[in-house]
Image 1 (tube, rainbow, N blue to C red):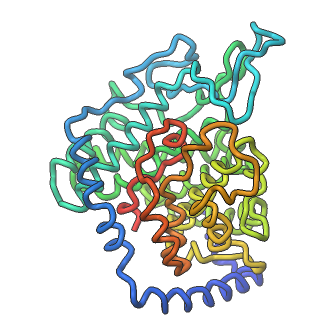
Image 2 (tube, rainbow, N blue to C red; image 1 turned 180 degrees about the vertical axis):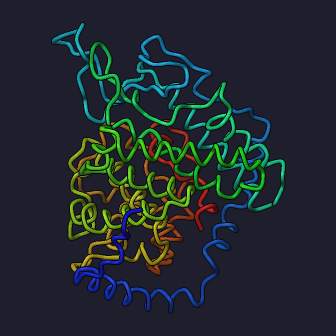
Length: 397
């Protein structure tokens, strides 16, 4: 067992808690007249959840073993994908592909990722349907997806991402950046916690073991550690995965480590004083990446400590409430966006932001919640779906 770093109450932590306490008092006054987050989300999403649950109810599980690529260096149980932004290099057509940031190559193999995204749409929707109605057919259908992906020997995925986002024609067969592909398991892990009674003890132990093994790979492999140490959205997404996978397995030591890292490394490194994320603004899709990192960071904070953690801020005020303050005007009206437009998919943003929900509740901002209700919760653009891993907020509140 490792020591809990949160037991160290530094001056920085004291100042941060003082700021959070001030915000908390404001929030409590606001929240006294409001319905609970669960009641609010349930009311907003009830019909949508049942529509999606009914859609997925007759659909059978589909895992990566249903798809094969001749370019995969691995076996049928190994997740394999190719890097989105890599294209043939005109200067060396037979050599490794060349990166063009922000422009996705439609010819790359993505069937395993699509299967995982399908899982992330179907299984949480069925679970949300069960949460709202207690219909056991929804729960059994959701459990069947988990068994197929993580337990059944013939169809399960191996608990690593050694072959994710490789580069064709002699490039690396897998890269640390590929770990972001399993961001689509975050809500799956969250949803699994609602279904424990629908598994046998052995099945539940095997399910937890898969996420435990995958988390260990994330924490100790060369690719995993490199992704953890990234300086942009990749590190935030690593942390969100680690937090939720550890939550499913009851690993509070890892969750404490993730929280300490967010507070002392990621937040100070990534957020500017105005609440923006400069590393995302520097990309060729600054609008989409700013939204994506905001949503992932807000979800991370909610996972680690719900409202208290979302309200956490550094002594200079940087935190998720500041991030929401920066981004919300551009979610409300992207014509006001003062930075470059995204090179692709500009027209498909924004969609319903989970960050708006978490920050609206935690920071006491009704206007964020009103905007959250207005935005589209079910985008159809595959690029947006790829960057939209939290679709059933009723499972989070």
